[in-house]
Image 1: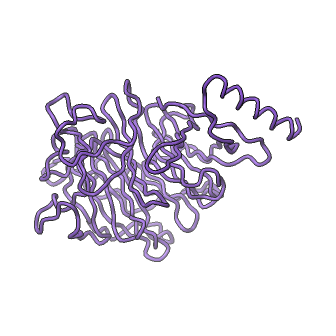
Image 2: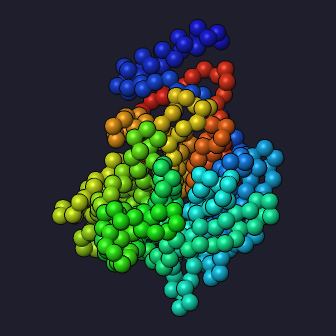
Length: 390
């Protein structure tokens, strides 16, 4: 089929969509989904290092690995898991972020679950020094300790701010919703600290000598496991798990309350329902699935070169439905949305962009798979149609 006939076909599809009342958004790039590697040790957080390898935490074993995309070789680092590490249900080796100067300092910020000396469930954010040459993780520096823990709802995503000054970390409600409204609890919060672990005095609830209050950036969260900064506006976005309904997409603004844990059980504030009277309430940008949860996990804004049409678009993955969504954002509003993966690979845990500009997705399984989305050169563009996220 000639290129001329292809464009005639695309125009015909667009015309038909217009007739039946579906707005055509734009021509979308063609892509293919590849399996990069199988048999991975249940990745929770994936991050590319300056050497081009993909580092990932393994939730159940508590280890840190580095995968060569070119060769498929996997390096296992010694020195982890830490002492008294716990892996149960949703707890384990969780969020990980490599320092922007990782090539020079080797720092990795990792949030993990552990038992304290009284066998209480806790979570901790630490900075480790990774030595790829020696294959070892060493020099743990604890940044936030004694965060509340449970078998479920432990958070715990970590991200470095765009100005490379701060760390943000999400913490779930540890199966106790009212903790999300309690300033004396770490449950259900977003925290902001300097990279050395000290607390910024301009945090919205800062009070000298009072922690965890002073750590808090936002509160009222159930279990938000996706964090990303918009590359153009700097807005701080998050995906959050609902209970059995209503997962959320939020913008995290200092001092605001996102409602979870407000009210009387089981009628807690959710989305914008039962949220009357929540102080400094911030409604979600979007609520996904009002009849059942999709289980939103991590997210990212695309900044690569392989898909220029997607530059600045938001991508997030889901666990329960195994989907990858793409959203175009304009002025904090979703103006376009597309489903790129729809359950055929099982539960999806994390998504990131590689140095090649391709999109990498990790599945959530004991023996997990790393997927890659890459453009198909020479294939005609698709017509991207809007839909309602379900």
